[in-house]
Length: 287
Image 1: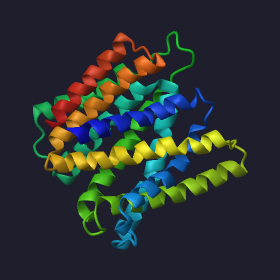
Image 2: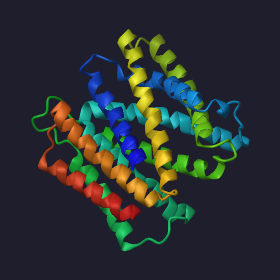
Image 3: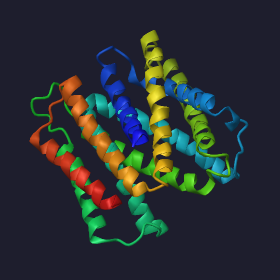
Image 4: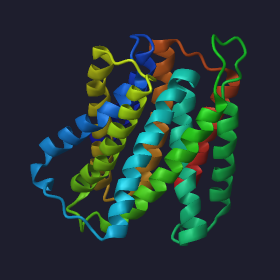
């Protein structure tokens, strides 16, 4: 249970970082793109024998680097949505994105078991949750950006689907979960260098020490949220039904409470209905 609590807390800390960036005048884009070297260094210090890497075939290697690029895109979208829409709606869009790998398993790979009434109802409730949890904009200081919630949902779903596939196919071949994660981060770091260079040349970002330093408190929970999730799965004998249900529900609810207490993000009745639908949908899909 300790590993589950830790992965939930570290996952919510990611959103807390994003939410605090505006308050401290931090460019979220710089912090996100520089957090990947922090993640890589943290993982390497945890398991130094992960290097040298044992790369698989060309197709799988390109897939690994591709997922690393996907990490950058989804993280940038998540940071943007958290600033514009708040922690709770973004957390919900992120966590109910699990319906995408579930649907891929059911309809494409045919490995997700039977399409039961509970799963169908769970999928319907999950999609409805996005609508109900989307900010209405009434009385808000700035207009909500609903497309960002949809983009977070789709991007995380696609990235997680690809990650689950490669993780099952080659994780042991490349030397275990930490080595696999470090290989993914190579793609993320390469992408970050290119994007930062492009934005700098075009004058689209303004470098500051606080934005650079902000990568540290972002990168550490980013790595440990994933690491403790893997440890939780090991502790529960890879029982994903139990672990993922508690994890996703825990992140959604803790994000809502944290946003209310520390950032005064008051949710409307409609958004609380959305959170409730999302929690119910996740439980029905996984259990």
